[in-house]
Structures are given as structure tokens and as C-alpha cells.
Image (cartoon, rainbow over all chains, first blue to last red; front, side):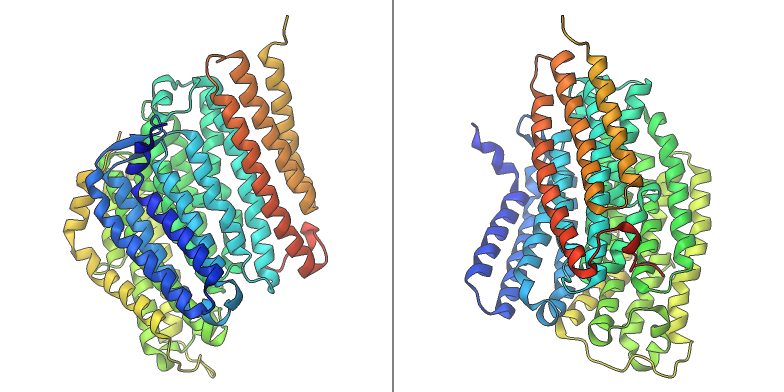
Length: 472
Length: 103
């Protein structure tokens, strides 16, 4: 066997090293606080090292099952940054409410990250499937992490059963695809795919499994319950990292395997985007629990991310990666504020946020920025990412779709501003008392705030992404 | 004379949709898990049948079905441990009674 294949898998190898080191440290280390700093430091090194992997260029390994290129490296780096921020926000929770399972938290989170790497880099449906399962099985255990809470167990049961069901549906599609094409390499399917009923049925079955990971609408039913029941740090991870990785993997599959017949999948993707954005928004309007509210908001954001997939051009890919990059900071800022408040006062409904500005002005300021950015109000980063993704879809002639998405942006502004109104205008007899967040949460919130304000103005980022993107 | 591939596909499709039916109508979490196993087995039959009758020159389908079996085992292990956790918390594994997370 040729071991040189492993050399191009820089990200995966260094993550495996981190995983093994964490296992050993968890086994022998007694002090949980030192362990946490060790884990975060190690992962920080891994993240920084990730930026040195640009020079690999395009390469493939294991007879073409695994591919890497600059855009893959970039996506993995984005996932790394997101995971690091999730770790920063989880620090206080780990130290105080999750004392006995700190090692497991880091280990399982990083295992799902490894699965996502494989999913992103796959060029064959076998590696893609293994990556998807490596990402979703440890995720179920993470959702079940609050062992003495009913909600957590229920959320995990819903998650794992829906995950298993949808991956079975996806496998059925893949098996039909194998029967129809005789190979499972994306490149071979590209050549042999035709517009016959068997091929199209295989494609639709397969799409269901990925749609579950991104929580597109017909497959979104688990989202709200799982997001609400899971620990807040895990919810943040689920809503950003896992979604971004799956969306990029879906885009790669569509471009590499089905580019010859875009009509077949763009038609149903069109309808899925419309109902995803609309239903996500309409359900978000009536939510009172902040985590449920962000769950539905993240469903509609997934619809916006899919606009990049339906475009399928290099601009579409660049806009999608950029959207995920901005969405990461924005959504994690919102979850950071929610988990800071939950850690100190166990309050989670929107009514509890009434009058937050009078007691905790800094936190409500960060939350306001996050809401403005999620809604796409101009000077903030969320506006630029929405602008690019709409432009990419409009360039392909999807005017009606972009128009519907724009209408939905207005609906979404309504509920994003409700949160702002609750914090700044509504009065409350017993608002959440003033408290000081711990230093780690402060660092995380500062990173997210700075990113939300200035990232949109740094145009070299988008230029760099579009220079390395590919499309149909 | 061997059985043609269509018959295998009929069996696997039936098995798959029996699984889907069970997933939808069953109320017991363990039964739901069993239905999912049926679906995964249907997938394995599909892979093996296609490999044997349509593309006998490669081993891709056999390999894929092996991986499906292994991953299904891992998934079942995690799912059962979560179901046990649910049982400890609620003393019940009926889907009707698991509804803490609703407004």
C-alpha cells in the first residue's frame, strides 16, 4: 500500500492527533480546568496549522475517493474557527454544569468535526456516507449530554431516530444510483447519469438524507425539538458547523455528479427553497423560547444558503461559503448571549428578555447586532452575505426565487426586531439581574462582535473565495 | 437457471416500504428502531443484487453493504443507549408520552 496518500490529508491527520492527545489527557489528567485549557490550546494550534495547508493545491487520494483543493481547505478552516468559538462559549458550562463529562464533550465534538471533514472532501458516495454517519452518531450523544434532564434525552431520541431514518432513505437512493450507473464515484455518475425515472428517483431519495442534515423543510421536523432540548453549546454547534459542512457537501455533489442534468434537481430544489424559507419564517414568528426561535430562524437561513446551491456557478459556491462564514459569527454571537444568560439565570423565553438593556446593556448590544446581522440590515456583515447570495442566484435567472426570498427577509426582520424590542423598549418588573460574564464568554462575544461589524468591509475575503471556487 | 434481478428488487423495495410504514405508525421506540433496520437491510439486498447480476466485475456493492451493516450496528448501539436513557427518565418508551418539548 502506498502510504503517501495520507500526506495530503493534513487536516484530518492533525485532528486525529488532537483527538488521541485529548483521550490520553482525559485519562491521566485530574484537573478539569487545566484539561480544558489544554484542549483549547491544542485545537487552536490545529486551527492555526490549518491555514498553512493552502499549498497542497488540488490532489486526490485513495484512487480518487478523497479530494482536496484550496476551497476544501478553506471550508475546513471555517469549520475549525466555528468549533473554536463554540468551545470558548462552552467553557463556563463545562466547568460548572458539566463537570464529569468535560473530556467526552471535547472528544465527541471533534469526532463529529472529523466526520464533517470527510463529508466535505468526499468524491465517492462511500466516503460521503461514512463521513455523514461519523458526523451524526456522536452528535446524538452530544444532544443527550444533560443526563439528568428529560428534555435532553427526548431530543436525542428524536435526533438519532430521524437521523437513522433519513440515512436509510439516502442509502436506498444511493443503491438505486449504483444499480443505474454502476459506480459511485461522482465523476462516473456525471458521465452516466440520465434523465430516466430510475435515476431521478435515486437522486430524490439521496437528497432526503442530506436535506435532513441541513434541515430543509420536508425533513425539518426534528430541528425545533432537538435544538430546544440539547445543551446550548451543542445547539450552537448543530446550527452552524454541522449545517455549513452538509451544505457544502451537497453543493459539491450537485456540481460534480449531477451537473449534466441541472433541470432535474433544480426544479425540486426551487420548491424546497421556497417552502424552507417561508415555513421557517412563519413558524419563527410564533416562538417564545429563544432556542426554538433560533431553530426556526436557522431553518430559513438554510433556505438562503441553498440559493447558492441552486445557482451552481463559481459565484454561487463563493457566495455560499461566504454566507456560512458570516452566519457562523452571527449565529454564534446570538447563542453566546443566550448561553451566558442561561448559565447565570436559567431563563430562556423571549419575555424574560424584557428590559435586558437596563440591566445588561453590553449583552443586549451584542444580541442586537446579531439580530440585525441575521436579518440583513446594511452596515453589518449579514447584509453583504445576503447580497452576494441573492446576486449569485439572480445571475442564473432565478428572479422569482430571489423575489420570494426578499419578501421573506422582510418577514424575518419582523421577528428579529421583536427580540430587539423586547430588550430595549419593553418594560419588566423583574428583568434579568445584572451579572458579569466569565472571561471566556467575553472573549468569544468580542470576537463575534468585531467580526460582525468589520468582516463585511474586508473585500479581499470574498475575492479570495471566488478565486478558488469552482462550479458547473 | 438463476432468479432474475427484478425479483430481488421487488423483495428489497417491499422490505424498504414495510420499514417506512413501521417507522410512521409504530409508537414504541424499539419498534421504530427495528423498522429502520428493515430499511437498511433492504438497502443491503439492493447493493448485493446489483453487484451480483448487473456489475459482477467489481466488488463495490459488496463493500458498500458491509459498511452499511457496520454503521447500522453503531447507530443501533447509540440509539438503544439513548432509548434506555429515555426510559430511565420517563419510565416509558411510548412516543405518545414523550412530549416534553412542545409549547
